Length: 140
Image (cartoon, rainbow, N blue to C red; front, side, top):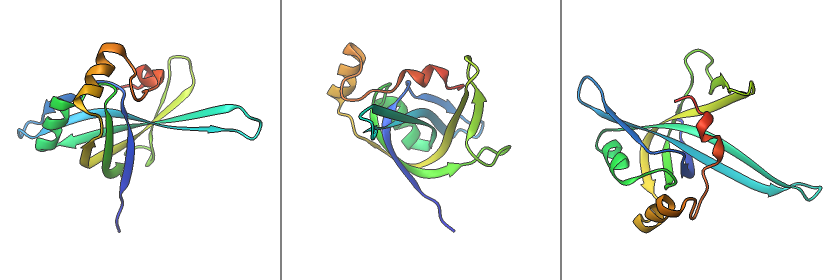
């Protein structure tokens, strides 16, 4: 059996690096993917899916060093189901609505933003991509 997922999106917040007791580095990032379309009645629609991504070892240290909120990335890895539900991680937002995020253990992370794009995003906000405002509601 084999499982692989590939996503392309924007970081919703700066990477968070930590070290495990055995000394291995792990960086956690949140990646938003968006899909936009026009419905049959002419209304513009948008759907955003959030992924929590763990990047291990030297690759995780590079992610932490070179990426920041708004950076575009391609992530390749495997989905890790919630041990309790067997599916995505589910929670209740502050407004009472349901929220969910999918967890990925990354095998490979490709940086798609240039350094200039990352700096422009930090200086002016939202250049070349837009992590949706929902990121503040992700519980991690």
